[in-house]
Image 1 (cartoon, rainbow, N blue to C red):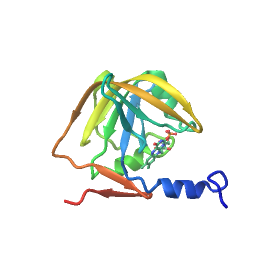
Image 2: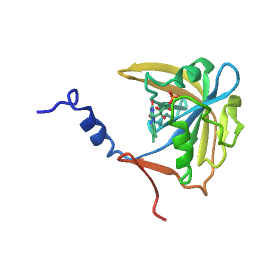
Image 3: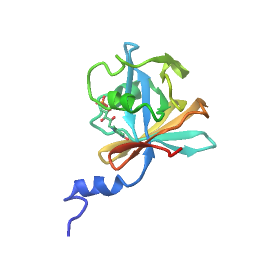
Image 4: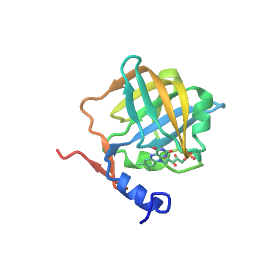
Length: 162
Ligand SMILES: Cc1cc2nc3c(=O)[nH]c(=O)nc-3n(C[C@H](O)[C@H](O)[C@H](O)COP(=O)(O)O)c2cc1C
């Protein structure tokens, strides 16, 4: 019998049946330049105190800049923002070259056209295998109720049926 240890592709395939949204986690690096990464691992955690979480991989080159900065903004991507997701899912290069944004909470980028944004301060970072679990304390947040979210399911993108 194959175990999850001997068959990581099966692990990914089965876990990919859990449908999620997609968020862009943004911050500034030490030089003030915008940094960001696409994640499907964003979740709400606690109301009192208000906490959210995302899980960056330990190989991420962007997460160390986010951790050093100490604050981040969660941008919930909207249905038309698959290209934004792809731009932020590559490692290296100027990911923000083709993206429009404005400084949001703590100066962290709020991308144009997102469904919602959530400005956070890093509360704790927990070790979790080949990932970290990052808890963020929510400082400010807003949503566009007329906007529809980008969905991610079995390695593909989708949107809610109208
Ligand atoms: C839909 C989607 C969801 C992703 N979710 C995560 C995630 O939850 N955690 C993570 O570390 N990487 C995730 N990634 C991959 C990162 O976006 C990507 O590895 C990272 O941004 C690489 O760039 P970096 O080295 O600048 O961090 C996801 C990519 C896509 C396209």
